[in-house]
Length: 345
Image (cartoon, rainbow, N blue to C red; front, side):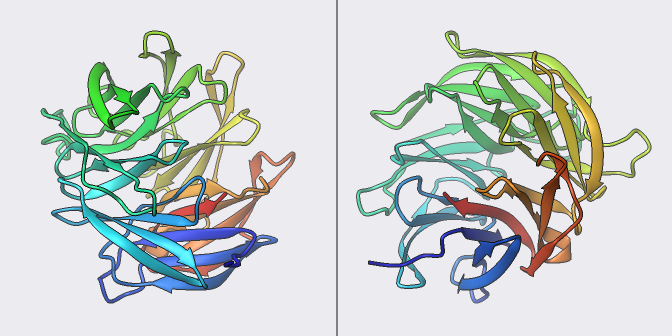
């Protein structure tokens, strides 16, 4: 039986096929210790662990796009297969809690594809593909750019953030067939550029980070109807901040704080979450590097780990003052063009 580190952290990056683009670390007491590197995938910029088995999935952010499946065994990542995704520049992966379906968002083609996860962890051919059409007002919004997807808490719906359309597009999800049925859509502010969404604990609200205007929008969620309603939009940086674009979003384990990363400003914004879901920005603190593209919380809840793409590092920042205030860097690891970090939980 294979033995893995008790706390395993995988980091994706932009890399050529002959360069190590996937980096696995052991994490303990705020420190990252290198364990495994894997080459062979072009631009594995987003990674995702299977919820039950030691299987890791990595996009190949290329045109045409693909997703790789790996099995972790004997201190190595073993490729299971590579599956074309029928889209260009896949940039995000979403999996259902049962680990049966992988939903792939494509930035360049503005499309979303569903792939089945087979019994051995490999990926089957797509069961569905939906194509977005349109544009908005920003120069980067010349066409659809599907950037990420999130399940509703009951997994009856999938909500896709389309940066190019200034829309959050909702689909009813058929978990038996792996199909997406158009269901709803909600507009953001023109030029906002929705990038990444997360449901609040309890499932009554969705928070969407908007990349282009560096804001967060709170949506109330009607679970019975599968509908979103905008209730608040708030800036992620101070008014006098230099040009910046927001990136990732995450809740504290308690649900009382929400964090957002700001690229250019190179900061992490901390928001207090009121009982009605409304946000108040409390602080913006250093991300410990440059261009914080993605971040996550450690399973112990004591640290926040940031993939700082342009400083080629993953920074470890502790939580202080009740584990919800972000402190200064206590550790870091070198990863060229780090883009995404995911714990195996």
